[in-house]
Length: 367
Length: 152
Image (cartoon, rainbow over the protein chains, first blue to last red):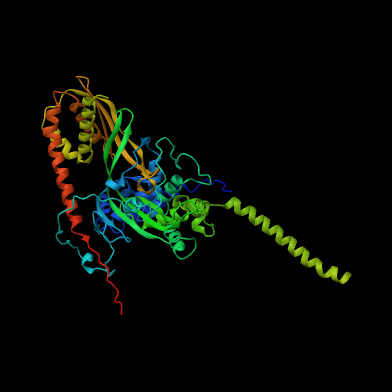
């Protein structure tokens, strides 16, 4: 039990003042601007938007600056901000098939309609520190080449045409969509709620769980069917306007994992799938998300639940880093009353122990 | 809905899409160059959120991905047309300008002017930017080939 304490206002105020100084750092070093963070630490901004569950680059950059680069603190700040604004409604579901693709790769087919586009990637770099970046650096002029006008269908759609992969769960426009920001979690949770939970889940937690499933803790034999990154158009069904209004585009990453088979006496075997989607260029996140989406389908696919990554209550209850850090970090707040009662109990137990051991030899002598 | 109403709605949507994709300073610069009709704010510009939805597997049933900041506004011309402005982000003035343009598109007197002086040049700029980005991405298109193993 946590009992509130009073006092310390002056010290707290001074501590926050000291924090502001430390945040600013050496005054001889120029202050970092939000646009510098947004433009040059863009993947950090993407992560804060994804796990903060709020798409707004400038706010995410501000949160990173305020949190001194502590990503979970920044995510916390963004989550707190979102609670201050009213929600106008929900968008139409995005069409990732119509994405303006900046990167799109498949590890299952080398020749895919629309082609494989590497885009801006760390893949195939040598992971050697680049001293050029340390002293100011202008990148080379970009190469361009003629863009194909061909569509870039999802790889899973291509497999789906031959029935080689299970179809996505059918869209029912009437069915309500679960929202864990409105109703508390309960189990078992449907896949819409699980995906919402995974979308805002801690990247490191999902990475570890996804990795565990690859290493054998939970059945999973995945291929990265497709990873795509680019801008998708957003339309909002505005009641006052009377039609779905285009409100701009959002950068997103999508990952389609293709996994081993399901089938039955009545159904031919086919590949199964796991799905990942996140704001910005969040490749590791969406890959991990797709792995864990698939492991969490164990119940639905009749697989034995033997590993943490397959246990939806375990995964969903511990995936949120704001909740997790709240509970872990609250331990450093004053627990004086709590601790006093435990101390009192311990003293009593020790007294009883001492009395018991002191009286024991006398009992022996009496026998 | 009649065919004309459908056309009008499609036109309004197309204009809204161009404006939502445009930089606010570009829109205000274009609007400053024309004589605007008398108008008032029907709804004061405000910030809020929308829940962005994805589809399971990309094409299946919907799920809630996360929220995005939006701004919205509504403007009424003195001639009665009501325009709505919605845009991603927290720029309320941008939402107001979109609402004003939407109202003008619905006015026979101003629709042509808005199209030629504001929307057409913005559309061209967006299209050029898209083409440039697509060409940059296309330069990273890769042709993987597999090596056939020798049979002895």
